[in-house]
Length: 349
Image (tube, rainbow, N blue to C red; front, top):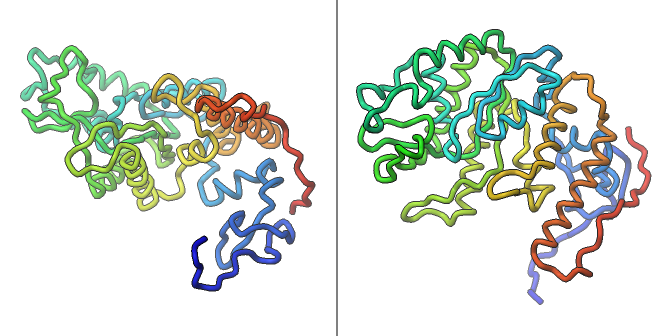
């Protein structure tokens, strides 16, 4: 056993909580300004106020309203969320790339859309025989999109990487991957944007959206692992992925700290086996977070209460933990069936 040379109190005999006094280990503590305050985790996690206190405490949750017209910007998951909101709000989707959906990619596309900033692809075509219609970047495409975006009241923007496609011959960044039949691996390379460029692109995006659509913009970080490409001296793929996510979240914390839905962080906290068919999120998990976003961030008339949602949320968490254990080929008797938990009653304020 290691020789501990400093004397240190590892536990408090009792801990202070907004919900009463409890004898809990300090690793169950939650920080609040000015003092350490703990919660009875075993029962608190099922309570309808748990997400408010632990995840959404300082975020702008008064976001979606009845009658909103929402623009969803991102990759495939933006379409999933738009479909999920279909019964309660009018939605449009701007699909930008897959695997290269960074703030810089979105900035390039939105500059073309809102400010008619030319991508200069006609005078410097990214492949032989290029036409705007192949990339849906023609003047007609732009005019039709702007008509559909009229009266947009809310924008939700997803991103999960800090990379984009760069054309070595024209020295231009591209908003998305070329069509596969035109993709040249030597010419169309992946470029990773710097930390500073990531922050500046985010600022530019917000300015564009506020100028042309609305001041209400919500951001969501996706959990997809996109850091499969690396260069000399790079971190290994998984640490590199977490570094990129940290750069995204850091930029959001600097530029727009309160307009955030922490889906990425919650998925990693509660769903250890969230992938389905490769990089995509399992449909049950996507549906869970769509419902969560509607319940906590909107004033929609929904059939599910917070209390009902939390009960199902805990059950689903357990099923995915069991799924993760089974996928690791553990013996059958080492994977107990998911059961309900007996929670101690707690008087909440």
